[in-house]
Image (cartoon, rainbow, N blue to C red):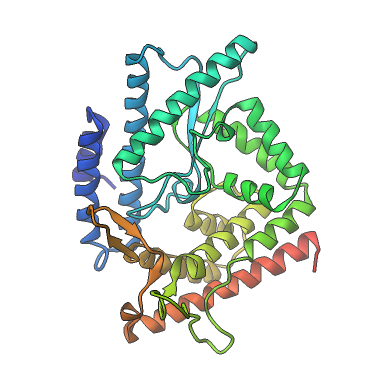
Length: 359
């Protein structure tokens, strides 16, 4: 459905001339969307917010290319794609998501080109990352970011890296594979990202050892609902009595449906998209898919609520719902959604062990 006001705002972003304009547009739009969280359908807010982030990042990349030319480095020497991982790859960013990114470019023909391309794209990535920091996107704490040489590679080296992650299934490599499963190109040559996904899925579906390791990682974060249906709140410190909605509700469902999708060769990256694809494939019943979508949508809304304003006015994600916000009106739908999350954690465990074995 056409949305002329939003289309106009996104067009304004696409022609912004500098980072100051982009930051002002981000703050203005997020303020507008924040005011709609309590009464608008969560899908509409999340969709608008992620279109905003995509537009801001895409324009930042284009401005970085212009800056590279101004600095005397010229235009990109070969096709490349800028990649998003994490919530960006899943189109589930909040008001305060950080940067999880990578960059892939076409293969060089010789050592001279290899050196030149590596220097160019690392410098481009550095400018993009720092520009996004200026817009209010902090870098990934785990250093999964395009300005890290390990995440800025030609396609052949990316393919070798993916193969190595599958060949050596230690905890860190399995974590990287799960990160890579959420990859989404935000700008550039989409075919390069598709080639990465081809390599990933060709390896994934025939590797039962990796599947077992992925299951162990997936089940690491438990839904915060006790055996008797009680909320498992934060017990100590300044957050005592609060609920960790990010790691105790949202992440467990992200992990469960990611793994169910990977098990079935589904390439969709958003969680709601994965749920829909699993239903379409007959791997979830209509009722299961509806229950899962409702629970996950509820967690998306809570994720948007779980933010505070920092001293500079920038939104900061706490990931936690405070004791004061855990009202009686919230408790019933919250426990219902958490119960659904727990059900799907058990489901993915049964499904994966049924197909690939394991304890």
